[in-house]
Image (tube, rainbow, N blue to C red; front, side):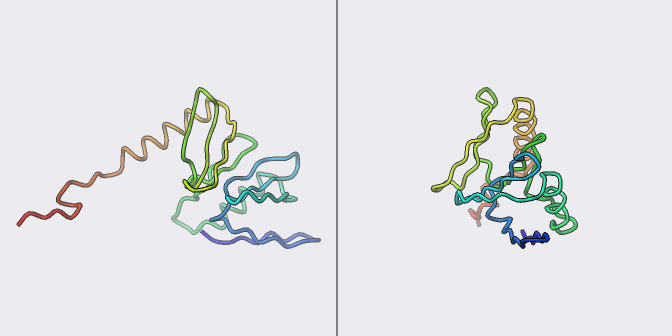
Length: 135
């Protein structure tokens, strides 16, 4: 995905969306958390951030960011665990970075079903397609 530029009267901020783990509402502002753990307070509300991300997404492609309720936008590519009973969503890179976010059960349940169905809808490879050609 692209980098985006947020330009206000007093500052210019360039965000690398590939490295963003999530955005979280903080009053009229938005707290950005990068995968590295670095945080930055943005002087825009979450709805405006969502609009900027949508505008930066190339036509015909789905954004890798997903709005969860009123206070959270997460990078879908970083979802590693959804625990509905614990109300936890874990984002990470299977390396040194892991974030546990508390999310309401109905949102997690819907997200879990959506992701599970997207994986089950993907075509599966047969043994021949995996490169074991028998001649």
